[in-house]
Length: 174
Image (cartoon, rainbow, N blue to C red; front, top):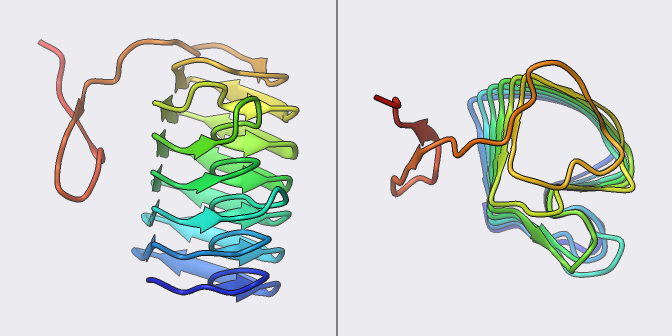
């Protein structure tokens, strides 16, 4: 929490396995707020309020390989890709909420390749910009970009319940 660096706020390259962790308020300068390169395996973790200040940024990552399950990404920001600029991402059962970037630069991702299943992308207009891959059984507010939408992809308010820790709970619709 609260790390900064010119290339990455937390890690530069390497292989990382992360379980039940929180990455908050890290600044990557001209790369990812958390990571610049490397391979990441992420389970049950939260990435929030991370930033990258330059146009090569990625609020969380720049040019990394990520496998993500049951995780939350919210309020991250960068000039390009509020969560990621480039990289290869495989995402399952995760939530991306209120991530930001400069206009037309992908509030969640700018470039790279994504395979996404059973996840929510909300409060991130223009979610994917110049990004390729597939998205299935997801709830996406808008901005699917070049992703191929598969079966079960919808755009319906997920009815988040606000908590002090962020929008990590869903309210049951009655």
